[in-house]
Amino acid sequence: MSDAWQGPLEKVDDYRWRIPRSYKPGMRVPGLVFADEKLLKDIRSDKALEQVANVAFLPGIVEASMAMPDIHWGYGFSIGGVAATDTEAGGVISPAGVGYDINCGIRLIKTDLVFDDIKDRIKDLTHALFSGIPAGVGSEGDIRVNPREEKQLLVKGSRWAVEEGYGTEADLECTEESGCMDGADPDAVSDRAYERGRSQSGTLGSGNHFLEVQVIDQLYDRELCDEFGFDLGRITVMIHSGSRGFGYQVCDDYVRSMIRCLQKYRINVPDRQLACAPVDSPEGKAYLGAMRCAANYGWANRQCLMHLTRRVFEKFFASSWEKLGMRLIYDVAHNIAKIETHTVKGKKMKLCVHRKGATRAFGPGQQGVPDRYQKTGQPVIIPGDMGRNSYMLVGTKAAMDETFGSTCHGAGRLKSRSAALRSIDSNKLLKDLASKGITVLASGRGTIVEEAPEVYKDVNDVVNVVHNAGISKRVCRMRPLGVIKG
Amino acid sequence: MKKKRYTIIEHTADIGVAVEANDLAGIFVNAAHAMFDIMAERQASSPRSLRETINVRLSAEKPDELLVLWLNELLSLSATRGLIFVEYTVNRLDGNGLDISVHGEQRCHYRFKAEIKAATYNDLELLHGASSYTAKVIFDV
Image (cartoon, rainbow over all chains, first blue to last red; front, side, top):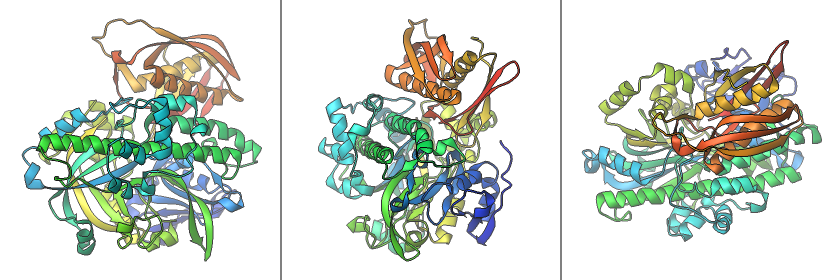
């Protein structure tokens, strides 16, 4: 691993740390890191904080270049980064602030099943899910689209899937942006991206993507749990996936073209991967149009994956998914850029909010939050690793005031993939997980090792920070029972 | 030039490679080998298969940008054509452009180890030393 970061970090309070603007000439705002002493030790061990400082160079950035407690070293932006730029003052949009897997995100499905219903059948259920859901590198699914349908999918997002019979109107209501961003421009997408996207809808993918059957093992707020219908022992399902090869190609196409924009618009950034263009420039508008297509692809993909999951449950339990109570709680994107209005220093501003490995966490009463969650705030779904926990939280007013309505997105990686492969024995790992009652199935053993619990920070520590800092609020915690991975 | 010379660079979330070669062509070929070695390995039991050849022509303003462009083009072709590239014939390569024939085998003969989303510009290096070239590329996985 590379050398530890030696730059200055000023303590603001127990959960906030500042990288002063003076650290690097060219920083337009300071860095603001949400972490506690324990997490900070690991955060300092790689180049993530240098990337937080680099993002502060982006033209039009307001308030701070922010990092959530799951921050780790990425490319251009760190993963766990939030940056908002003022669209009316030359603010830029950067594909690196979104990532290659555009609209990588997660959805949480509640069921009426309880632990006792499945405790003796977890292995069989996991195998059934593994057979019924395409997963793995370059996996292709049965849900295929022709070129004309693909354009529809890019414009309509989850609605396309629902119109095809892969879900209901209620699913759309429980998806961020109702599963469809306005302003998607299919003409801004390259032929190659279309080609890569055509056969991959309804596929999980690989790496850290997963589908997990979980049980609720801790309630934090009785009132909020009652609102969502959560109680101890209830079975939930979590799906983590993104826009697959389609999104990778869109990002690659636009990083390439925006490198030229650095010179054209005289933008000075310390890392070429931070290539960007003013939001209102032709290049910025084209990227936004294409990125929204990929975002819609991501939502349609997770909608298709949920449909396949419901089908597996129906067959396995010989009951309809409606009778099993498989209701979507919410679907959130955690790699995305959005044009949003926020109040900054008492002034309403139209901002381009980049969330790269960060989740929107809008509070109660906020526009953009579904009617049914207006009282509670937007559900925030935070996956952990395959051996420990995952969480559901809600957004808060404090997040609106301080982080442009954003919070963490997961546990955050701690150890490189090669280090994991060198130090972890797959047989022992699977045995350990089995002893905790967790069944894991993956296309390759390497994936299981690369995604072992010890390569991640403890999600409990990460969630502790965002909860105590007030930028989201704990509702309940889940533990994994059955996991499928690519 | 066909000899694979590279080492893996540790990266918290992603993975990188450091490549060495006597000439620029060697850098491009070795980086491609490194990338597909990370992604997949040939199944021992798989029979010899016919190779498909594609001609790749690209241009860029700088040699290191050309390297990233080349690797991403291969990833993209691998995904759309269902191929793993195993051999490269360099017809022309200078700092601003390339013409390389790439030879690939069907993906069904391979076991996949990792999905590489893209080669990135993050910490990208391409250096010409006294007697050799070196390059460093970080992949998003």
